[in-house]
Image 1 (tube, rainbow, N blue to C red):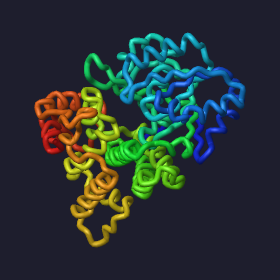
Image 2 (cartoon, rainbow, N blue to C red):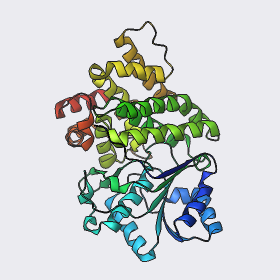
Image 3 (cartoon, helix red, strand yellow):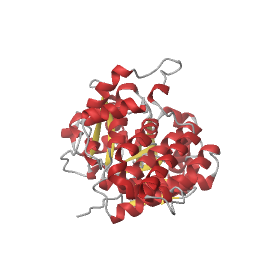
Image 4 (cartoon, one colour):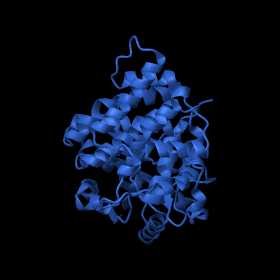
Length: 391
């Protein structure tokens, strides 16, 4: 049996954010609670949406205290600000961090018994759909605007809460390439590789089906064809549009079929060491592909084709290796760190993660909800060995 859950309405294309005025009027919404971050406010990305709200006569307030790996405290503070303003719609402007925060707020508003946030972890038994939410994606990575997933960091426990809830899905999503132009090269690269990880893990997970396979394969092609150009020239509208589509369709798939241990291993890197999620996924992806190769050879050949590799005349093993190498080369071409020891403490040359930290990371990764979606059954010991190989 296959199940597909998607958001109600999505818009694509440069300038599509202007359709928000039509949607707000149609739904009778006149008071918006905006969730974003300080950088997007500072660089006038949020203004691209508030200008539309101003023209439509919609009043709003902006909550911008959201971390790159959003925390329980971020959610609780946003929830308090929401209640003080009493809006009729939530508008998330940003990447996964802002959208995930907005999702958590929206779920708790209509399911107040989950106000501790921690109880949302896993498949929470919420009864009511989240408060109406519109999302404006500013990155092409998490596809949070179309998924039933969100991730919040429990700083006290040093781990990420992976939340899966069909009730959290946003009502309307906007993927406007003009809002993605200001993304710096590093963020474009890491979020793009995050999207590629979604597509590859969604393609090889045991829960995959013909619909998700179609979405994932095309996502891999979109990303392979456009990510280098988007990193090289952020104003390349065609590349930005291609990445927006690639990210979105990967989200449509993995939201319904699951992910694997690239994400399981990336989550504790973010929770314990604040490593950006896209960087963690990108770094780990080739190593985990090597590990999963025995269980996904045929599909790895398909991945190679999607990435432009001519596999004619290759054996199944050779084609699978070509896929792994194509992923690794793409990562190198856009300056993604290739080993864990390359990750440094912010503003220093000091190594961020030490070898003795890997045991705790492996334990955290093994119990992550994404582990069950890996095509190859694993163990704490094998995950630890993978961390050592990637180190």
